[in-house]
View 1 (cartoon, rainbow, N blue to C red):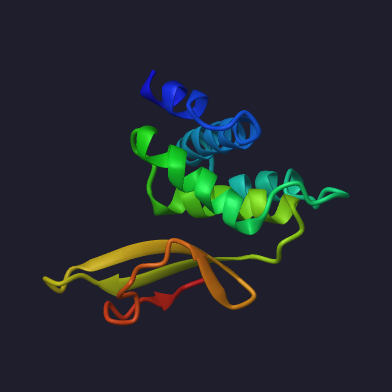
View 2: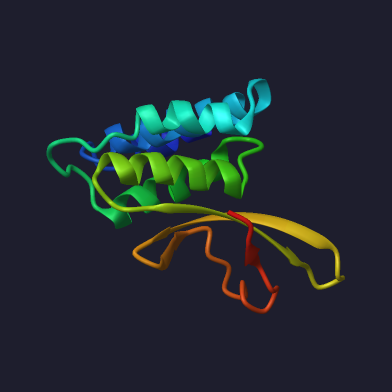
Length: 138
C-alpha cells in the first residue's frame, strides 16, 4: 500500500514508468525463483528490443527503479540491475550487466550486480567498489 501511495504522489507523467519499474522488478524477482538465470535472461532480452522513439532518459529510468525498489520486499542489486538493463535497452541505451565478487570489511566474500552504459556505472555503483576489490565475473 505504501508503494501505491508513493507512486500516486509523483507527477502523473512519471506514474507509468514507476508502475512499469515495479511490475518488472516483481516479475524478475519471481522469475529468479522459478527458472534458471539464463532462461530468464533470454526472456528479458526478448522484451528489451529498442522502441522506435525514446520516451525516458537514462536518469529517469534509474530514478524510477531506485524510487520503487526499497518498497518491494526482497529486491536486491541483481533484480535492480536486470530491471534497469531491460528498461534502458528498450529506450536504446547500450548496457552491460555486470556480476562481480569482492570482500566486505570482515573479509567475507560478497556478490554484487550493476549495470554499465558506455563504460560508466549507471545503477548499482558502490562508492567504494574498487576498495572492496569487486572483480566482474560477467
